[in-house]
Amino acid sequence: MTAIKGILGRKLGMTQIFDPETGNVDAVTVIEAGPCPVVTVRTQAADGYEAVQLAFEAVQDRKLTKGELGHLKKAGVGGHRHLVEFRGASELQQGETVTVEAFEPGDRIKVSGISIGKGFQGTIKRHNFSRGPMSHGSHNVRKPGSVGASATPSRVFKGKKMAGRMGAHRVTQPGLVVHEVDAERNLLLVRGAVPGPKSGLVEIRAVES
Image (cartoon, rainbow, N blue to C red):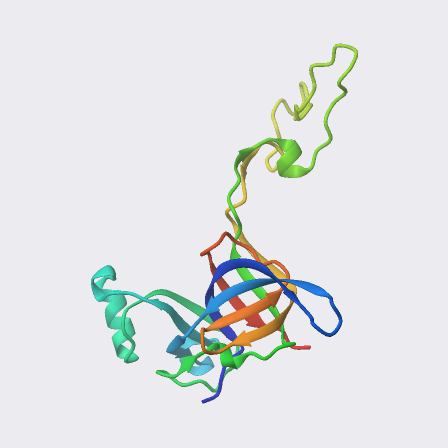
């Protein structure tokens, strides 16, 4: 089987691993990745681009729509909760399965996920604004300050950095390295932190050196 350097998984959390030889400690993120069956192979001739569509997290058929089930059954794949396409050429065929064995320790990767939502936050936390003075009767403690002009243009420009919803958007963290692969338990140990909360869905893609 030809493995693609891309896989879906769930972030389980972070831990530390000690190197018995050097005594160094590495912070690693534990990701439960795959197995991911190949549902569709996109080609330049048929679809205008090359990609591989992977499924992840098997579920009961009753939890999916008829359209989703029909799409999966064409590839001989049972019910899965998530479908994600990984762009690029691949020798994978429909019906094959991608596992963590596609990766090796030392592989350079990037991980995408939905960042942790922080809710409604002010400008100091959301945009790293500075606070106002605390003395001489100042009331500008954590306020954003002036946000618009006076008579011209008499409005606040779009895109102004203000208070609002923070987090819960797609983030890609590059520059990560695979520390260890546990094929028996479908685990990837990644050196460093990856986006998202615990149990959050993540996409792992290899980066060519």
